[in-house]
Amino acid sequence: ETIKLSYLSLSSNPLRSIIKHARGLFKQSTRGRVSILRVDRYGNWHESGGIVKRSVDSVHLPSNIKERLLEDAKNFLSPETRRWYEDRGIPYRRGYLLHGVPGSGKSSLCHVLASETDRPIYILNLSAASMDDEEFNERMGEIPGGALVLIEDVDAAFVDREASIESQTKGKRGGGISFSTLLNAIDGIGAIQGRVLCLTTNHIDKLDPALIRPGRIDLRFEFKNANQEQAKELFLRWYMPRHTQSNEEVDEKDQESKVVQALADQFAGKIKAHSLSVAAIQGFLLSCGKDYQKAVKDIDGWMEE
Image (tube, rainbow, N blue to C red; front, side, top):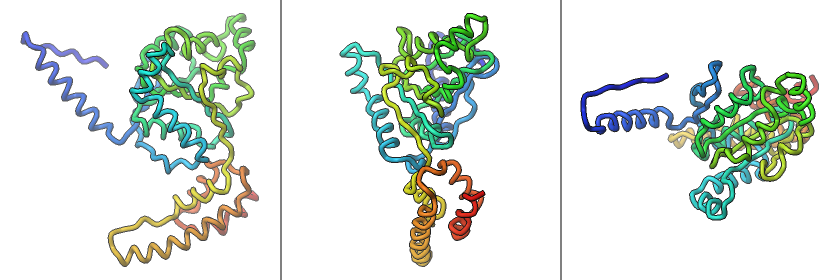
């Protein structure tokens, strides 16, 4: 949408004032939220509505994944790191591959990453019917430096280079864009400086090695089904009482907290490590509502279904 303003003045101050005010209103409206942008049916970036920022504690992953990724990204996005890259003539960009079982928290961690670094997320669907090489390059060229670019389920667009080449030879669009176009967008001469690229896949074995080689992907993180510690953390986040200002209520909730802590250990002990995804456990807890006794009692029967 384009708005044209006309005014009778030799000074640019009125226009500058309007722009400053508009920016202030926008920042105020998006405070505490992450901006999500997708390519609409007309081929333009469209903000589909911000989502509430997500805290680190709300994603239950092994610390070697969550903390390592966030620490690396924050370090990369610092002004000192940018100058270090520029002084040495190294392309300033970072790439992460998040791979593993469905429902294990890959997209959720990208949400946390954007929240923690206060960056917008640009989501690209390589398999979209309207996405060809020209369209892809134009949309990539519009992404500002410092943004988080998310390409989910990249294996669905490219199984391997040979399949892509064969489809192009037959006049078909190999997953929407050519393999070479994607590679050039990641680390070609015109690749976006300062961007953080996140690729997700449930099947790393289906990806062409050229796509995820060092230099294009800097760090890889494998996501597995939940271990017992993750199951316990989920239970505690679901049912641990929140304290209030009343001393009497605090005492009551302290007693309840001890009960929930004990039940969390029982709950986690019933779940075999890496047998269920985080999403599956969350779905079960949702079905139990606020009844933590029911969650512990019913988990065995639910797993047998």
